[in-house]
Image 1 (cartoon, protein in one colour):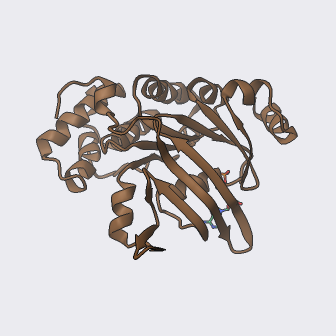
Image 2 (cartoon, protein in one colour; image 1 turned 90 degrees about the horizontal axis):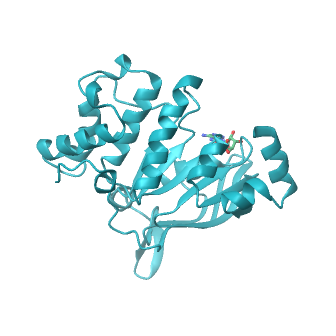
Length: 271
Ligand code: ADP
């Protein structure tokens, strides 16, 4: 592993060739009688930054939770890197996947949550090295070298020996970003990562993410209410309403010339 801490090396993505990285085919998700996603189709190409916007309750977080396999679709299939996430092909048939298959496919995905979810009993360094050592099988030295590079990237080198509670919310969220990147995922899922932060801490986290978006080739799928950030980093914006994509396109198109009345209403309420 290189000691070089340049972001493009720390988050090197071996498969950025513009090919399809995520595919939702007719994905339906219900909670009881509430159909949250309704036969949803969409794809994300590798290296792209895609932002999901839309009113609260329109199903955006559910999409990220399905990709993390925290939830399973009721109907339809999800592919990551050409492989089914919760299904396997056996004897020419599609069957529910075993845990081992799903774990392998999920290794390509990293997620940063609203509430950081750091391990409170571990110092910053160990928070970042834990999964690379235990899941990827890196040596402690390799994992620590990788972690140091990432702490440099998120501007927290001097906090390496602290516990999460000794850090501000913004610093904890930056550790969470470093922890997700330490697994070198192909795709980074960001679920409203600034909405639990005090307003003065939001900019620091968004700056780190802008930096990652602009200097690395990692694919990003992002749910956010920060519309300026969405405009800065997105290649594509998907506007959701009631579990469907009602409009999609470049940030210029969506933010300046939205076609759909619901998009116009939503943007005038949040901008
Ligand atoms: P968004 O991220 O767009 O705000 P979500 O994906 O969080 O929307 O939620 C979509 C809908 O699914 C909401 O109506 C929400 O109440 C419902 N929902 C989400 N998770 C659960 C759950 N675990 N159990 C029951 N309903 C849920």
